[in-house]
Length: 261
Image 1 (cartoon, rainbow, N blue to C red):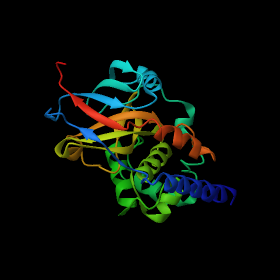
Image 2: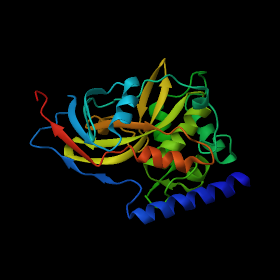
Image 3: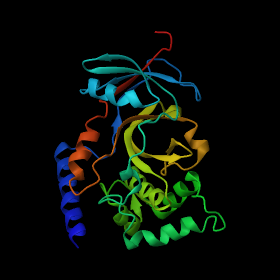
Image 4: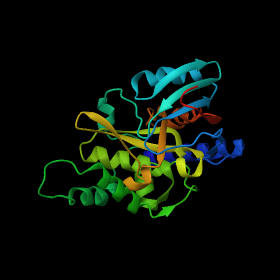
């Protein structure tokens, strides 16, 4: 009961704060192609306009993102389609938490479904299969849920990228796979557009693997570029403070640069 009461209070605070900002939780990020053609499979040379550029550059010290230049209000980066952070998994990435609450009874049916994917094997299910289970467990795709705990998300059967990533982290950890939620920008090559987004990094075979439960089909992900900005590190009752910190790392604008500039 205490967890539920705290969750309601935290959720209400999140909704109120974003209502004051007058922006949806997941927002479009201004994107300038500058005449540069995006070719799937080739890296992008980007300029990210953001206030905390030095802090963001420090985060990329343990990532596959290449930092080319750091200015007071911008970063020049080179990103590939599946860039990720590379900092090693910590014990908490395998544990139940206030937000990633896979120890709650609401998660038991989904956990059983995951184990039934290959009952003869002792190995965890493939991340693609877990992502598909989460996608199907949240049939109502909506921004109206704000930021739910994993148990709330599966009970509501609804959510946006935040609910999908929180629930996938919970399901992955329940299967013995370290997992974390990542916030950043998603660049859609076909639309020349960028959006604030949340996805997962799941630790498999000694390395973090990018997994997106909102887009579980590999064919779709081939035309997408993920720009990780921060991991969701505060999963306790005060998670809204960490949430605002993570969202504050998102750029105010993303611009493409020619590769030879």
